[in-house]
Length: 92
Image 1 (tube, rainbow, N blue to C red):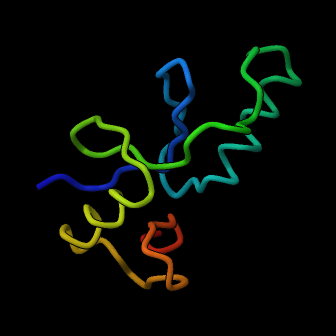
Image 2: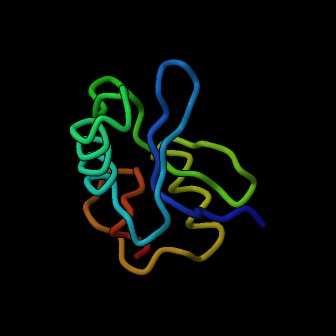
């Protein structure tokens, strides 16, 4: 069964950026900013990139598909908000 493994960004060029859990999407924003300011990355913190998750199958999924996967895998600890999308806070 596929599970959600980490929060991630998908960039327009098809690359992804993620950090191990319990990193959240705001953690990814801050890390990209830190790397850029340190001259270690040309990548800007996301603006139009897609926020989502990496799965145990190595796939990037958006927040909607992520919710379906996390629910099927029994990963939801407490659902935050009523929107049909997944937040890392729902799982860790």
